Length: 94
Image (cartoon, rainbow, N blue to C red; front, side, top):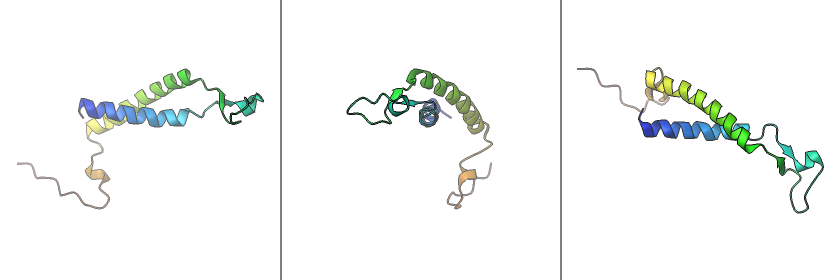
C-alpha cells in the first residue's frame, strides 16, 4: 500500500467514524427547553465537536492500523472480494 492509499484509507475511516460518533450524547435545544426563535427544536445546543473529533481520531487510528495491517499482510486480497469471478486467474509464477 502506498502513502497516498494509506492517507485515503485513513480519511475514509475517519469520516465514517466521525459520522457514527457525531450524534452520540448531543444535547438539543428541545432537550434543554431553550429553543431559540427561528431554529428547529432538534438544533444542537452543546455538540462537543472538538472532543468528538479527538475521539474519532483515536478510534480511526486503531481501525486504520488493523485494516492497513490486514491489507499489507495479504490475508485479504482483491481476488477474495471478486464474488462474480470477473477477474482473470492469477498469473503462474515463473
